[in-house]
Length: 84
Image 1 (cartoon, rainbow, N blue to C red):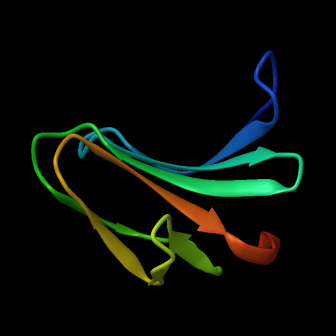
Image 2 (cartoon, helix red, strand yellow):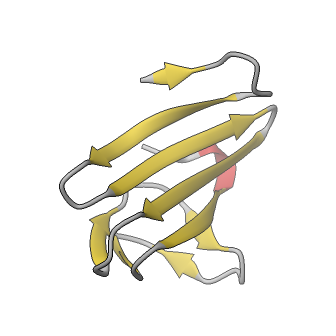
């Protein structure tokens, strides 16, 4: 799914898991891309990430999976438009 409307840029949903209350989306604006991982549930959730060069905001590289704490949001930068 791709959405572009009144927002500047758009987003693509990679994962929407209602039972686990997890949403993984790619947010795009101009040349900037971020991957946003949201856990709206009361339990920590392990999420498989799409392939690509991903970094946490503290510059730590992330690959494979990420564990999201309960009721949390994590933003990962996407290098070189590398998101698969």
